[in-house]
Length: 183
Image 1 (cartoon, rainbow, N blue to C red):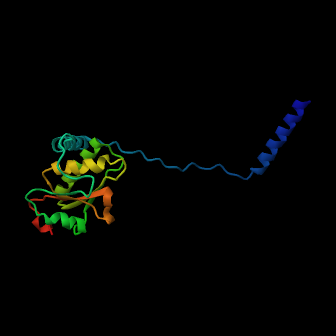
Image 2: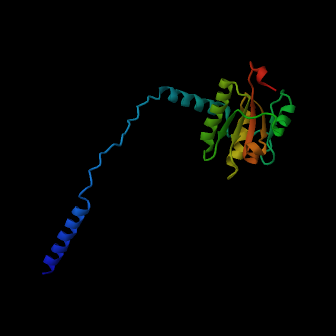
Image 3: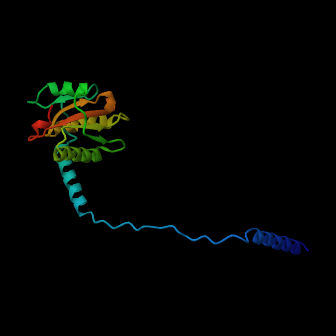
């Protein structure tokens, strides 16, 4: 008897459900799914190899320059105007490009630094900001050491507060044919 009562209750429930949705219409599926075009990355692979080569050529972990990375980072390439560091410190130069290195390891940071310097030279940007963060201080110490090794870096200084303070550095890139961009 229990089976009959359960089957009667189930049948009543189904009938009640059918009555309650009697005026409903079936929905038309109108979701459009676009296929992503397949891109060939021949040019990107070449630029990746170039960036890696530049990073390996210019940035060495073994060379430790004589700059203080524990205090305020301050460097001017020999032969360049010493006043450049003071101008960077005061915020006279506004960065035209910014690079955020948060979450990157040293090898990836080297690649990104090489790409930033290349982009600055290609687009004729004189000043750039590199945000390395503070964290465990690995990149805080390594980034200035890498940058000092590059022949196209004129000056480096810890960024003013509006650009990152102790967690960032401003750089000036040597642009040989762009004296009109210099201040």
